[in-house]
Length: 160
Picture (cartoon, one colour):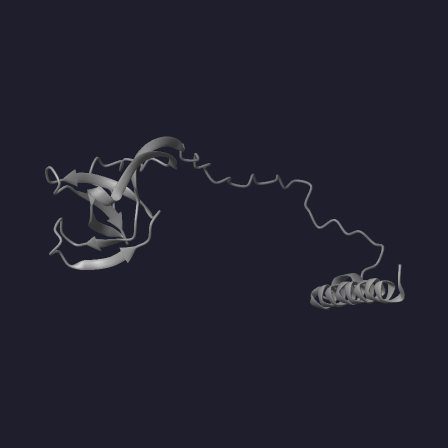
């Protein structure tokens, strides 16, 4: 090996070592400092039992265990854009343009509306619903984990 190669290797080692030292010093300086416990500094070796032998221990109340919700797998109908495409508020080219999405964007499919060459797909879009021309989409299914919403105990509608 020539002198320049050895110098470069040595400089690389020194730089790496410097980085390790800096990282360690930062980690050590962030660590909270232990403070002496004031009760321990005045403690003696004398044990004092302040309990009355006639006292009976009171059992502590334990909170009721809430069962974990059961997670299930469901199949969701999805769509993926095959090109960059406009997202509209209505199933029509004259509907308000809500945005443009790039090729490969995926959405939950709600339903398909229209007939023939005028089919539009209703999708979940930005916490609402929107439409994309169906000819620019490909359908697929996706399995997702879902937690069922518990039924209200009074038999009414779930709280929103």
